[in-house]
Amino acid sequence: MTFEISKEFRFEAAHRLPNVPEGHKCGRIHGHSFTLDVSVTGDLGEPSGWVIDYGEIKVAVKPLIDQLDHHYLNDVPGLENPTSEILAQWIWNALKPRLPGLSQVTIRETETTSCTYRGGGA
Image (cartoon, rainbow, N blue to C red; front, side, top):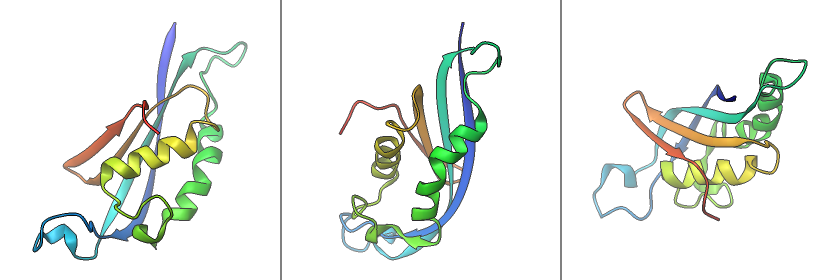
């Protein structure tokens, strides 16, 4: 049996989107209370009865949260145009080597907007 588990993280960050049309509100510096959901898929381990310890997910994600929380995302290498899509892919690329079974990363900028990335890109 295959299961998918998820762990949620939160961080605060500012950004601006440099490639939007002139006058677009996202071209100005603004901030978000981001939510990050990290999902891992796998079979139940023996004898643990779990896919992965949630603590292992936390350890893998912590350096990324430390790099993003209360920072200006545009200054983070690889996030010069920090759209939700690019941020989700950046997080995926950083986590995939550390988290076997990583199945998706979801970023929420607000309560009503989100982006989910399931790999497949560089």
